[in-house]
Amino acid sequence: MISEIRNLIAECINDFAKNNGIDFNVVASDIKLEQIRHNIPGDIYTNASIAYAKRLNIGVVDLSKIMVLAIQKNRYVSDVYVSESGFINITINADAWRKNIQNILSLGNMYGSCNLFQGKTANVEFVSANPTGPLHTGHARNAVLGSCIANLMEKVGYKVTREFYINDMGNQIKLLGKSLYLRYLEACNHDIGGRFSDCMYHGEYIKKWASCLVEKYGQSLPIDNQDSEDEAERFCAQYALSASLDEFKSDLQLLGVMMDIYTSEKEVMSGDKRDEAFKILKNKGLIYEGILPKPKSSDASEEWEEAQQTLFRSTSYGDDIDRAVKKSNGDWTYFASDIAYHYDKISRGYDRLVNIFGADHIGYVKRIKAAVAAMCSDEKPVSIDIIAYQLVNFLENNVQIKMSKRSGVFITLKDVVEKVGKDITRFTMISRDSNSVIDFDFAKVVETSLENPLFYIQYCHARICSVFRNYEQQYGKLHFDDACTKNCFSYITHKDEIEIIKILAFYPDLVLSAAIHLEPHRICNYLRDLSKAFHYLWNQGKINAELRFIDTSNKEKTLDRMYFLKAIQIVIQNALSILGIDPVFEMK
Image (cartoon, rainbow, N blue to C red; front, side):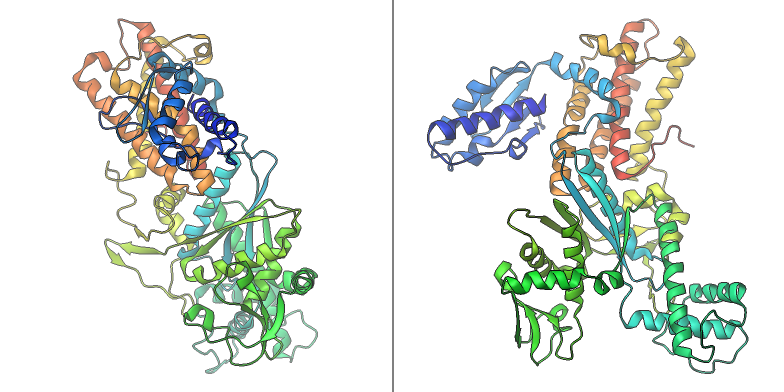
């Protein structure tokens, strides 16, 4: 219903543009159509005449009149009027709202899905970690955010690849190998003296891996030269990388995150993709030798030097300055690795790339977008979205927990999930938009009170399940198949019931909007609104017997309300599935 009206408005605008020789076309998904609240007459409104009148060279009122004539013809509409501010307010007939119950029951877990982007492919890279130890709490937010975005994109038709990028290059890997080798010697009862410096990795996981090495290989590592510490450290580094990756996969699985691809930075940089990428950039005249001025921002100055370097003309594609890809000593920069990696993704044929970065990498956004734009062909452009998320503060009863990975004092992702559970962790990490800092208080997130948003939502679902159990005790097994043959749910008439049906009707629209804007926190907000409306209706039933879900004197009325509740349950379950959260059927 909502989509049909939106398409009608878009068609009206495009027909006007065409008939008046105006080169303009609006996509239906760009038409704002939202629910009216706060006792204003009507059910839904649009600002389309205000948004597009200027571009169509017509007055707002005149465009509104044209739209009203078109909207009035819609089968669901009972009234349309234009407010003084130019908004078009639309009233939907009550039967149309009730009919959506049938639509939800018929579609089931497909309600809210669409095929707008069917045939399109997307790559979502949302965990990028140094394999120098277990995933820590800092990886939890991007893991949840990325997995929810991938779920949303699949709901609107994309075929999505979920990707983990392993940062397995650089001095950190050498330090990792040295740290593990020294702990191995220590586990073999060798005196390592003061060789274990502050710059090495001190976590208990290093000692655990060292014990595993002793258990597996004893006093002799499987290397050619037992006297070569360099060879032993390289072996230990490879062992640590493998052990880290196994733990990454296990920890992400605890969080309900499954990856399709694990890509190694080392393999990308040692393969052909780097040379292929730079050949394309050179052929376009985008690689040159030069000296960059010292940048003002600290994130850019780390790769700057006052010497001639190999540079990429990223300013040709919207960046603030050109960027170094090779230092004066011949070493590749971190950005060169990013270029090679993104060319690797482009060459796999994706239509859309999505990267989830921490806020500390915000300075890389423009340069990476510039590189992707430069490496794409005119025949196959690839869009890229980069989301920079803010930090998560972990607290215990309002006291912040201080952490340091190198010193080994930190909370792992596994610790968090095992302490509060997968669903609470996921909901807390996705409950706010990516630009907002999250305070994750271990004491508060597990509270079983209506102040806890996830408990509030799950309580709504559990209450519905309790009604179904009560019904079946009195009338026997519930069957919803025959709901699809009903013409009208005539007993669903109260304004609070209709209000909930309106919220349910906007769910597909919400999913599409959240997917287009890559904002899964909108699903959390929606679930809170739906739960609030349901709990209000539940409490009204305690006061008004007419609103109780089970009326022993009227089975038809009771059955209509069971269908109504089933529709609510389906939408809650569908929304929770996007968030990767399991519904609760009974509160303990």
